[in-house]
Amino acid sequence: MRKGLIKATDAFERIVHWSLAISCLLLCLTGLGMMFHSFNFIGTLMGGLKSLKYVHNFTGLWFAVSLYFAIRMWWKEAGVFSMPEDLEWMKVAGGYLWHVDHVPEVGKYNPGQKMFFLAVAIFGGLMVITGIIMWFPLLFPAGLVRLMYMLHALGFVVIFPFFFVHLYLGTVGSPGSLSAMTTGWVTRAWLKKQHAKWLKEMEEKGELVVFGEEKKETSAHH
Amino acid sequence: MTEYIKLIDVSKCTGCRACQLACKQWNGLPAKQTVNYGTYQNPPDLQANTWTLIRFTEIAEKDRVKWLFRKDGCMHCTDAACVKVCPSGALYHTDIGTVAVNLDKCIGCKECISACPFDIPRYDRATDKVYKCDLCYSRIKADLIPACAKACPTGAITFGEKKAMIKKAYDRAKELGGEANVYGDKFVGGTHVVYVLTEKPRVYGLPSKPSVPATIIIWKDILKPLSLIAAGGVIAGSFLHYIIHGPKLPDENQDQAGKGGE
Image 1 (tube, each protein chain N blue to C red):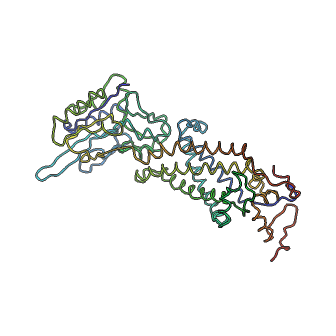
Image 2 (spheres, rainbow over the protein chains, first blue to last red; image 1 turned 90 degrees about the vertical axis):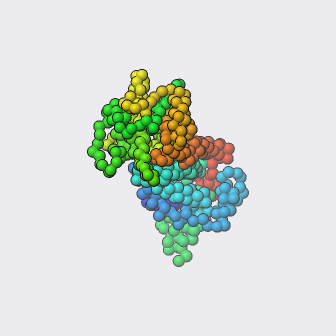
Image 3 (cartoon, each protein chain N blue to C red; image 1 turned 30 degrees about the vertical axis):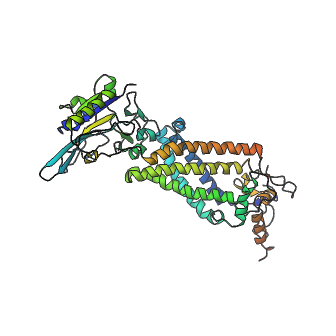
């Protein structure tokens, strides 16, 4: 860690994030192995497609637990849009797609991240419910089970693109972002560029934790 | 590919269940403990080790009772929902148009059970696999007719080339007259088990217009390709974004930490 870095996440946040991320990725991979015959070979790595089925099902339970903690932890910050500034941000697509002179400043989560959170929360929940019914199809009417298969596939169509954009913008697409989820420490320049409002809020409330400095709790307004 | 069909003429069936037994014998499927619930239908339903079954139906009319027999089992659809959903390729179309199961590949996901418009496949907990009639593919390949057809003493079950059998079915329905009808050749791309029924299909517990369920079509024909397009699109899109628009970098020289994060 270097002096001057700012703490963006705590350890619990990062554990939940990676628990959700790894289980989600494993589910995508094993799910693909069952969705397409040409991806059946993924099962070979796990000792056959039948084992892959069990890996998928039990990883689903792991995902469900991770999702529960993720929603409980983030819904207040990432699940609620603050208008009109979020709308302004969306109008310019956060400055990601074309040149924008002034991108509206955002707090801890930008509207893109909020949309990703909501997509995972809603469709992830849908994946858990449909998945459990698909696991025990003989306990339910066939018509309902067929609907679950359809919605499960729809969930993948929605979640995967969001997931990949998140992966891209969390790494090479936005350098400096990754450390927020690895060590938890980010640079002031990155924070100022990406989440200026949050930086200001933390400074105002005296919540800013800077590496190598005493926490400035006493210097705050209250 | 020459397609073959099994024709079941229910008007000739006496409900003797020789077909049921022959099926068990040829396929090595011993009987299980069963229950008597006041009908000849035994066991009560298709099972993982009972691939064909005579269904007995009693219809009470004013002054008489109609006692109907129908041999139930896989219809061997051309447009088979089970083959469409099977994730492992265990269910497949044979070279004669029937639907067989490669048990080595079956992973016991039960998707075919929900998909089948005729409610045919049965799951066995002990082996974690799904079973159904394969129209005696092994016998056909050895120039024998299916075991059920071989055992049938009245000629209610016959087996032969598709065209000839369908013609035979229509001739027979015409000969019988009344409500007699041919069931199987007009839906799900044509089944490879065709009935000559003497009553309307639903009287026998058969769906009037069976089809691959709409949810299955949306799932497999729309969402499945769409998932590849969406996934491929977003991966390609991210790459193009990187090389055209470029990553979003923090502004430099704002403070001493400005150069971090690359």
